Every structure is written in structure tokens, then in C-alpha cells.
Image 1 (cartoon, protein in one colour):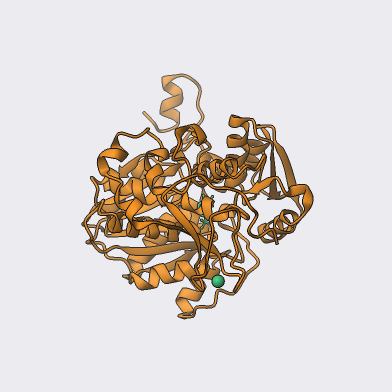
Image 2 (cartoon, rainbow, N blue to C red):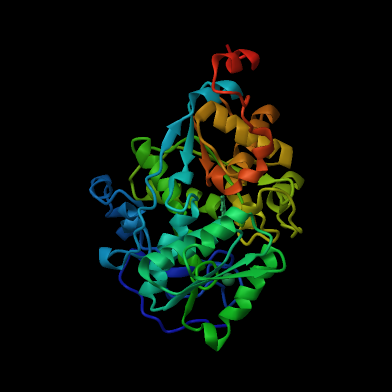
Amino acid sequence: MTALIDRPTLPSPASVLVCRNCLAEYPLGPQHACLECWGPLEIGYDPAALARVTTADVEAGPHSLWRYAGLLPVGQDPATRVDSGTGMTPLIRADRLAEELGFTAPVWVKDDSANPTHSFKDRVVSVAITAARELGFTRIACASTGNLANSVAAHAARIGMPSIVFVPADLEPAKITQTAIYGGTLVGIEGSYDDVNRLCSELGETDEFEDTGFVNVNVRPYYAEGSKTLGYEVAEQLGWRLPEQYVAPMASGSMLTKIHKAFKELTGAGLVAETPWTVFGAQSAGCSPIATAFSAGVDDVVPVRPTGIAKSLNIGNPADGPYALDAVRTTGGAMASVDDDEIREGIRLLARTTGVFAETAGGVTVAVLKKLVEQGAIDTTKETVVYNTGDGLKTVDAVSDGARPTAVIKPTLKGMREAGLL
Ligand SMILES: *Cc1c(COP(=O)(O)O)cnc(C)c1O
Ligand SMILES: [Zn+2]
């Protein structure tokens, strides 16, 4: 493997790469696996550097995720940032959803469909492509279930960096179009996401890809840090405090764990008061290896062959599964999975109560929230944040059959009367 490539890193509060499994430490750089145990590496910070960040510094920053640069491993110098305006998405108080589900405490929807390419992936890509450029890579690549492809191609186009994006060939048409339109190289693979990912790991070892940053392979530790901003933003938008519960969708499980990490860092840095929070994880029944391990009470996440309409979450062999289980278990939370009909109903429920049209992943999260309430597994007296991670226009086909005009009529009053609308 291309371990310990000598690529200098710029000064930042990040100090080290740490193995999440055996805690071995490595210098910062484009490395993602531990040489001792093959566990995943994550960015470690100098706690004193994080503690120097103040809420006033953040509030004086740009209206994008780069306002949190002091808590990120790259982009300390604004000149190195790839800033697409990602972040600072709406935190919507969803009173009608809360009422319908029987919550007596506020429910908030963090609506990341408002990002530039309409999913939360713009956060991880903003950080990953900034890292790739700081580390001296000249081409950017990824393995994607769809949304990452959209975002990598768009960010590469913005800065004029060549991109090569690998996706399963059977993706939703909107996600193919929304990647190809930006003009990079797009490769459809006859296989699942897990096949795509394996190919990318192999390519990363070749000389031809030496100058390529794979956002979710060799620069994955940096990529993953972008998800923390979903936690920072919610805390800031609540007036610098933490919610009591959050519900997040899981593909690899990374995003859920990084929101948890963000809350720990905010507390450690003294940016919010230390109040407890509980983590809940959502998967689709067509691909629920993490939720299945949770229900079985085991640590082993057994890989599956994904099926079902929530394609953006279809990772059958989730790299962060064990860490997602740990975040949920240590905070006393729960996980659940929902089938395709429940996902469609989740999309409709959010749309008709909140005015937010979510992609299938958001349908998974809302449907799981509903299921957790029915199971009594989530506390309806506690303030809860629900993460909507993508835009319904990306997966229109999932619900278009049940979303037709009430009537089609002649442009006359008679037409209205005949349709029973007058
Ligand atoms: C990628 C993705 C996620 C979560 O991904 P993780 O691999 O668990 O970090 C959630 N929602 C959408 C829409 C996504 O595209
Ligand atoms: Zn290790």
C-alpha cells in the first residue's frame, strides 16, 4: 500500500492520524489504514488548539462550513479552501411532524438538501478536496453510491481539477446526469458499491493513480471530518448548545459517528455546556447490516448484498459499522430499519408536515424516527434533531407514482365543478 507517502501537511489544529482500533499513531498524510491492525485511521487534534477556538471566532467566519476551520484538519488559510458555499443549511423547527408523531419536545429537521449539489456529501467533499490540494494531489477521484459522485464532479469543476468518479452502473438516472454534466470522467461499474470500492482501493495502489486523491480511500480520514460540521452547525443554530437526541441515516456509518465526535469536541473545547445526548441510527431493510447487528446485540457487522430504493445508503460492507454501534450503545440510543414502502411513507410524512422533499435516505430517517416512537425506543419528551441528507428531486421515481395531480381539467369553472373542486 502507498503508506507514509512523504507529503507535507500545512499547520492546523490536527496533530496526528490515530487508529480507531488499536490507537497506533501516524503522521498526518494520505493514509487511511493502520499498518499494525488494518483498522481505519482518524484525525486526532491538539486539544489545546481546539480549546483556543471561540464562538465569536466562528460567528465572525464565512457563511459556510469553513466558519469551523479552527476545528478542521485543513483550510486554515482561506486561500487553500475549496469553498462552494456548502453548509449553514436550514435547521427547521418541525412542529407539525412533532405533533403527528406525539413528541412533546421540539423536533428539528437539519435540511442538508440545501447544499450546492443537494446532499450532505458537499461537506465531506469540501474538506477532502481541500486536503487533496494541500497534500499536493493533482486529480480527485471517488467510489460513490451517487451523491458523492455529484459532489466530487462539481467541486472538481469549480477549481478546474481533473476528476474520475466510479459508480454502480444502475444508479438513479438523476444522479448519473448530475455527475456527468460537470464534465469529469464518469465510470459506471457493472457491480455493487462494494465492488466499486474494492476496485478503487486497487487503483489507488497503481503508479497511474499516484497523483490522485481518492476522497473516500486515501484521504478518507480528512473526508470523514467534513461530517462533523453537521454537529457543529446544529449546536450553533440552537444557540451554542447540544440537542438531547439525534437520528441519522447510515451507509458506511461514518456520518453518524462524526456528529457524535463533533459533540464531544464542542464539549471538550468548552464551546457548549456539557449536556448528555443520545444517538439513533437509521438503515433501510434492503441494506441493514449495522441495524441488524444492533438488534442482535452483537459487535460483528456481517456484510450483505444491498437491495431496495435507498441507493445512497446501499453499502453492504460498512467500514464504520462497529464505531456507529459503539456511539449508539454508549449513549443509550437505538437503531432500526424500514422497508421500501415505509421509506416512501417517510418521504411523504416529512413533505406534508414540514414542506421538505427528501430523497430516499431522508425517507429512511423519518420512517425510522416514526418506528422508534412506536417501539418506545426514543424519548418523545426530549428535543430531537433529524438529519435529512438529500433532496427528493434526486430520487423522484421512488414516489412519483403516488404523487399525481388531484385532477386535470379544462380551464373553466365548469371543469372545476365537474372535478368536484368547486
Ligand atoms: C452518503 C450518504 C449518507 C451517509 O453516509 P455514511 O457513509 O454513513 O457517512 C447519508 N445520506 C445520504 C443521502 C448520503 O448520500
Ligand atoms: Zn491499528
